[in-house]
Amino acid sequence: MANGQVVLVTTEPLGGGAPVRSVFFVAEGDPAKATSIIAAMMAPNERVEAYGPLPEVAVKALGLRPGDFTHG
Image 1: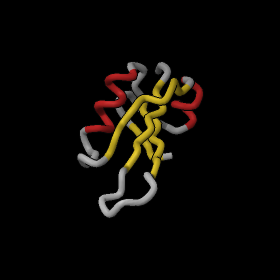
Image 2: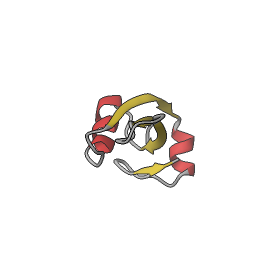
Image 3: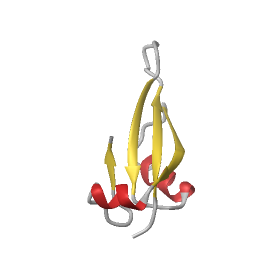
């Protein structure tokens, strides 16, 4: 296993208002690949960005296998 990525999703409400932020933990070390895994299931009004590395020990503690993710 290797390091993963913390991915931040910002949702702009369609009716206006403050954006809502969500965090995902992805078992993928490459920021671009981790972002694309999450972006594949997001709506057009959601911005997806890699926030930073997720240590290998955290990936293991979350029980993630390569390519898996969980919502934080």
